[in-house]
Length: 336
Ligand code: ACO
Image 1 (cartoon, rainbow, N blue to C red):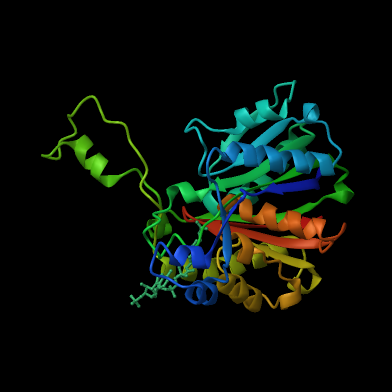
Image 2 (cartoon, rainbow, N blue to C red):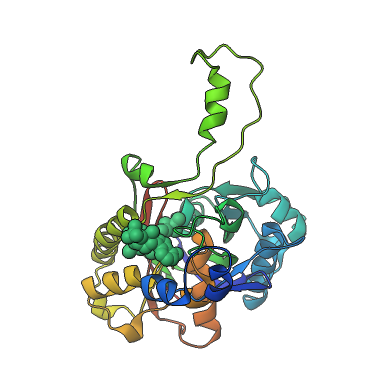
């Protein structure tokens, strides 16, 4: 079967930067508390008429430019997001904005902060076996729209962003997706979510709990609800196991790997995973101080910065892992 390779990357963030001090004006918190517990100092937040679609298109264009690639030659666009601006999905609108004239398939993938890793793996199979040559994978989320800005336990963590990579068919010897490991645990899902509003469900069921009220009312989603301690424990337990399993499938150990690139949720999670896997500080990619947790965008955003700054060079091996709501988690070993 064919190989597939990442050949370009790009990213985009909203213009409004919100610092920890800014947050301390709207909730009872401090720069010190947030920095020490999370490593986050700033996050970007969509405002005014900014849209997630715009960010995704900007990130996509930059990735295509880096690869000197014509959008008309795309076979597939995967938009990994849990916050689409249309419940039916946003990928076809991105396809339209990019001006792809040959109508490539475009669809959304919903897997929270694991979305981008899942997107990469979903790009690989139609390239390896399905005759596709060029797949654009976008990770983009606008969690600021689903955060309770009066809840200091969650509003300090998240930011908005988009990142993209172009995955292309290549000879098997040049393969750039060496192995993967993916999981989910619906049981643990209760620790992190933004479900349809309970009170509205109660209304739907009627005061006596019967399901006979008709027609139903329009639903809305609740804000992000999280048990931070449980999510922390889950990440520190499951992510190292997943990376170890992916490394084993690729016939590698952490000493052979140039970079550890985790979903950017919390610096303490990143440090704990790096320690567990014996990655020294200088091999760990981290930019969450500037952007907070950008969900499906965090890995391609950090990758893009690391590539453009010359840290990640052609031939480097990267152990990437996403984890989050679902619960979902997974790793991919990438050769850039
Ligand atoms: N400022 C000041 N005090 C705060 C704040 C805040 N922003 N938030 C909570 N506190 C207080 C709490 O009220 C509590 O006070 P109490 O002891 O008087 O009750 C105290 O600080 C400790 O709160 P905890 O929630 O126990 O704090 P913890 O040490 O667990 O840190 C945190 C919280 C940072 C959220 C941590 O649990 C964490 O990072 N968990 C992982 C979360 C995560 O990464 N989620 C996203 C991953 S998945 C995805 O990306 C969607």
